[in-house]
Length: 558
Ligand SMILES: [Zn+2]
Image (cartoon, rainbow, N blue to C red; front, side):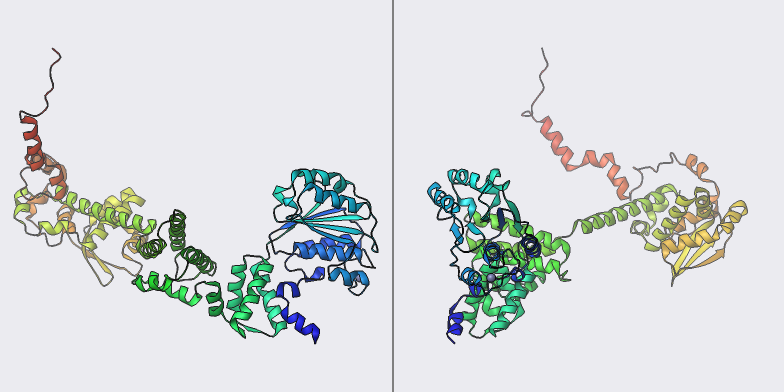
């Protein structure tokens, strides 16, 4: 009964302090090595245990000491019943000397300790010196310790523990067997916490233990202290929301809501109001942790690039906080930037957009240059043609046909040439591509031979389901070029088209269409029309400026 009441008062970290090697949490390799050393009696005279606070260094040192003073020593399994084990468990064994170097760091303290090493153990086989936080010793103290540490009496064992082994002189490190304690994994800690709570008969939510573990930052002792607090605070059942409230953290459910609003680009004002009571630095930390979890869980709500953006925004905000900026302002800025970050296009999207624009531009140019160079209709005819503008507003179907031609050219120039010469676009509807064919002679044979390829190219451009339908016509292919550009262009009188391309060029002044006598020029032409440039407002203003008396003049050398 008495034992129970004293247990109830005892804090969890002490009550559940490991008493055996197998009780150590998350340090399997260390406990195995030390156990083997004890069982095979291959003991070093000095051990150095380093690692994060609360990772089990002091517990290990004490278990090791007990294993060295037990009546069955050295053994990895102290009997727990002999006088030595009992007094070791109660921290009052005369042959186990614990020193805290943080408060006894001077040379005199070490001299006392060295003096102790000269006397044989009172009852046990060994005399064990545990020096905690050994890195706190002064340089002189270290120097004084060196000699004894190197060659202590056979019955003396040193166990040094530190959170900061880098601060130890190399001379100390080289004289000890060094064991590095790992950070205890969150999973191990949660498991240990649930084990303790089950023993204590306390109900809990696993999410609450996750939060406690995160707050403990890998230190089992710190986490257990927080759990002590949570047990008192929750009065019966430990829930996630109670724990977050106790720690002043953000409830995970609320965090989900925050990010829902951000991802949906909703108004952030209500969130700001709710977060006002929190410490903003901590809010930023918790957002980072939240995002880290979401990333590990591969949450589909978050695109990968969003993590990158969010984390940069948080880093910037932390920097602002460090500069003592107004914390509310930082919070609003952070949330606004996050909201905004959801909108920004990815670099891939931007590239795709640019490429699209570029393709449309090229198509337009292709269509207008076709209009210039291939129709060979006298300028006046174009002038009066109301459908001229529609040539520029490209018809998707015909652009595709052009593409088909260029694809075939790419694969085989000769085949492309034949295709272009013999076939013209008629229509494309319900997945049926109608082609007018004027194929003759060699070309006809070639096209026939390569029909399978052509079908493949058609599928590539128009889609797999596309059917081909040929209609035999007996027309000059050149004439049909106009119809490729626009089927609505009337088939002009035969004689106009009878001559081959080269002759048409001679007929006109130049193969390059005249720029000045087309009253309705294409944009490409407009770009190049020098008269327009010279007559433009900007040019005339510039000219005026240069001609004005106040304009700078270049003086001659003489
Ligand atoms: Zn024992």
